[in-house]
Image (cartoon, rainbow, N blue to C red):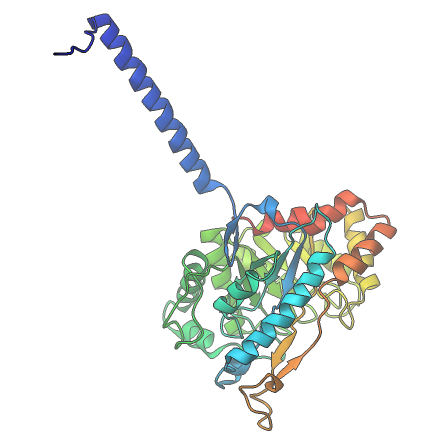
Length: 387
């Protein structure tokens, strides 16, 4: 037995075809709009992948978790992270971050840590991934070359900076680490890379900016301008204005620049340099009180300076943290201990809860509103870290 499909008249055919075409265009437009929107939506780039900024919670903006190793700055081999040492570090670091997480309210959870250990001073992308998988809080890692008054610039940075087009080469390294993944420290310099992306550029200066520091910092401005990635800085009792002016002149946007280690001798002279801090925020940069609880950075001292900036209307440009580094490798300076044991590391039982348990209550008691405290700890980090 034969069957026949119903026959459409010309008018019905044209109507049906037009309706189908319209539906296809609408569907295609919706998909294309969604794709386009997805491309431009800013994300915070954690070691486990991109996260919507509103999912961060309370963020400690400058920490080291778990280690710092200056060996290569002094042209020694880096510390061997044998499994026993690695596991011990992960165990203790996990407990410290879980203590931080336990202080957070539902609104502040899950929390985040900006891990500010940059290229070749102990940064191990795979170690950070393993740590991130053990805790609830997000971890954001750093690219960049860093130094300070007590530690020289990395030889790789110095070498690249002196080559023809050196600043651009350094910038391209930062950009690669942001867009593709951070360098693998188990190989020779630049030989191998991971797929773990950096989410912030870390730079630093010693007491006064040296030529090699200027090259690395200029490269940071170029990389930030191209990618949108924020820059966070180390200062040594002052130098923040010098950093900010160089970065802005080199093309960085002020809302992408975080001047760190505020709270003590920021102008190289005064213990509490409010006018100096005010010059930085008036440039449009963030000021970061990220050594809360350290010597010379007592909680009440930091709270007092933060409150003054809030009262002047700058709550949306303030960030906080601790700058703790639980493990510091000393094996390169002390040959009496085997370098493949935990004894080759100086351990400091670091308290990542000082901001939440001490600073924030002091700010509230001093009259800083809940809205401004949320801006400092949740809203500002979400905004500056997203790109």
